[in-house]
Image (cartoon, rainbow, N blue to C red; front, side, top):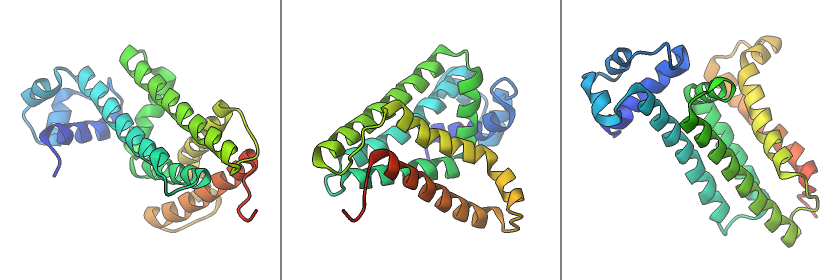
Length: 208
C-alpha cells in the first residue's frame, strides 16, 4: 500500500515526464491522483515543492540500495559492481518517467534545490565507486586503477544513451517484439556490454 503522499508523487511524476514542470498544473495532478487539489498544498505546499520532493524521494531510494550493496560482506568487489549495474539499469528501465525528468533537468534546470540534489547524488556515486575500487585494488580483485569520474561516466553515460536511443535501436534491428519482450533482451545485452567494458577498465579476470 502506498501513502496518499506517494500517490500524489507518482501521479505527478507521470505528468512531469510527459508535459514538463511548467506544462503540468496542480489541477491535473490532483485529478490524476484522484485527490482534492487542496491536498497538494497540505502535503507539499506548492507544485515546486512537490517537484523537489519527488526528485529527493527517487534519488534517496536509489542511493539506499547502492549503499546496501557496498556494505555487503558476502560479495567481492567485482560482484558489487555487477549488482550496482544491474540495479541502476533496472531502475532506468522500470522508472522511465523519472529518468526522463532527470535528463531534462540536467540540461535545463534553474532550481537550486534540484541542482543540489543532482550534485549530491553524483558525488555519492563517485564516493561509492572509489570505495569499491580502492578495496578491489587492495585485495587484488582489480589490477587497474582508472579515473573514478570516467568510470562513473562509462556506466551512467552508456546506460542513459542506450535508454534514449532504445526505439531507434529497435527499428534498426527490425525487431517486431512487444515492448516488454524487447526490453528484456535489450537491457540484458546492455548490462552484459557494460560489464565487459568494466572488466577491461578494472583489470578484472574471472578465472585467475
